[in-house]
Image (tube, rainbow, N blue to C red; front, top):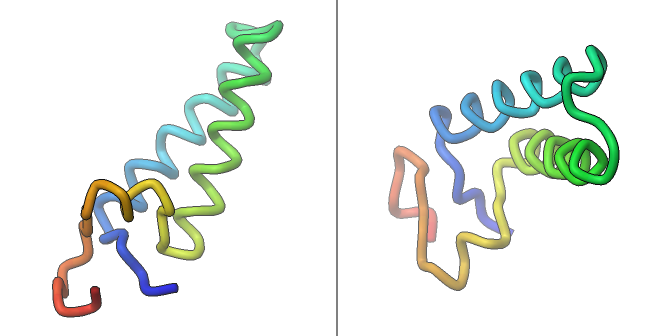
Length: 70
């Protein structure tokens, strides 16, 4: 499993996850939509921490600064 996420991509995902988390805690988003968004936020955090996004593979995407990794 080679890394395919760059620093900017990881930071953006972490910020989005943080915003979703804050909106959920403040009960701005709730119900089924809130649950789905929290799951998405968890996926964003996990993929940011490991630096790998499996959805990038079918699209041939790579946001790392060093494109020689793939």
